[in-house]
Length: 501
Image (cartoon, rainbow, N blue to C red):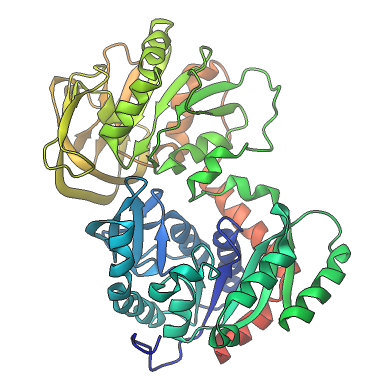
């Protein structure tokens, strides 16, 4: 790090790095954010670099990873672009859109981004300092694992940041996947001597059963690393109710839903290759009588689905081509002939039209493709990205809706003359003449309880919903904070963050 910028000041902070991806760092930071906030400490979350197509719009007109938005909520504040200064949004297996401090900077292939990363460190540190001006403590989340030493030279996400900002580090490991002792000891052994000095301890996450059974495990880890434990966090089943960031969550079965419950509303969602902003599904998942079925490649859309929901996508035209290659367009037509309903959100809405064009090659190769032809409109991708929090009403019921827009492209056509929503006085989306095909650009609309209830009434018939989704999220955050308070050493974390390395 001698050739890179370093902060000349100590900022009270603590970083959580993982022994791998999906070990639970994001949720852990959210829980500790809420726990410290309830103690009267002004806390802010921070993630130097994130990779996700599940992004959130910030009040300052940018976008960050969804996990940092949840962590900001846990702190009781609005999300800011400075909480996640570098966001990578994958567009292909080889390249990603690079978002810096909330705005699109460029699109880069993996090798090109590797050379770009060191140039982004000043921006990362700038955001870190900016957050420190309003915080007593900053809780930092790493990305992936610091043990990926082949990528260490240009790292800004884990130890590269920790060294530049002089931040103490706790290692988080997932015991549920097995090999937890090896993952902690192995990670420690791969670190440099200076990095080992930044590493102050570890937390075992997702433990099932009696934690006293792992006491000898702690002894073994201490013998090999000298690191103390800061807690063993047992499995928290309600975590599934909180917004997930990584699309890996879509491949996992959602527990807690009664498998044989009568009268389930079945919502089928084609699993697009570059699915984005899939937290639109969370309020539906939380409904006790709604089953959200992620339809994987190679599977048909279930014939007994009540609703087919086309979600957002980072690469609309390639995902539409893939949808056709799976034969899902034929399934959608058959679904409509049976009297089913279709709803498209953002990219899914664009797919419902007659044409999609990307003349500048913004999302991939330039070109034009036929849409599904279900709404009389065409969409052209443009270089201007709309990022805004917005509210309004649903046209047919006048129920309030709120959420955010995050899209490139303008839609035009006669089909838009019957809009689905009115957002701050302007029409948005479209509804077919029979009301069974709908679409809009508004992400998050199902978080609006009254709208969600009214929309689902067409499938529920005489039943009413009682779920308060936003309050449910708050309650789960509080319960997880209680969980963290009981099972991790939060006073020691506070002391470490304030005293530094």
